[in-house]
Length: 116
Image 1 (cartoon, rainbow, N blue to C red):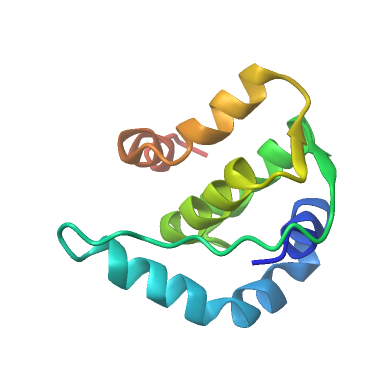
Image 2 (cartoon, rainbow, N blue to C red):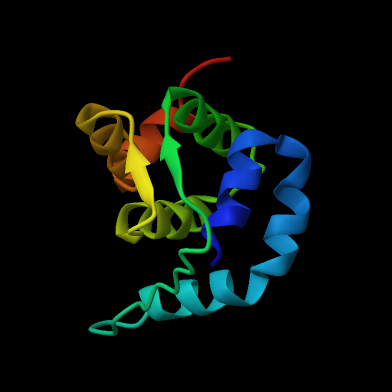
């Protein structure tokens, strides 16, 4: 997954559907590996672009999840790409920790139960 493509969806919600279509096979393979006991889940990161992940980006990821534009699995894969990438910096460590917390299954279920 190209970091530049992730950046596009973090900046512009109109790119989300193209992004999902482009990476559908990666998401399917990732999901299949997660369901196999003891299997490793390879994350493919193409560090083709550098940027600083900021609060606005985190808010957009949360919005995509809460509005069902991205699934929990898709967000997990994206978060893994962001945190494993050498070309993504974080505005601060707290922001990185909050991003990583999104992959916590209990947190994601709690977010779903928040009233609109």
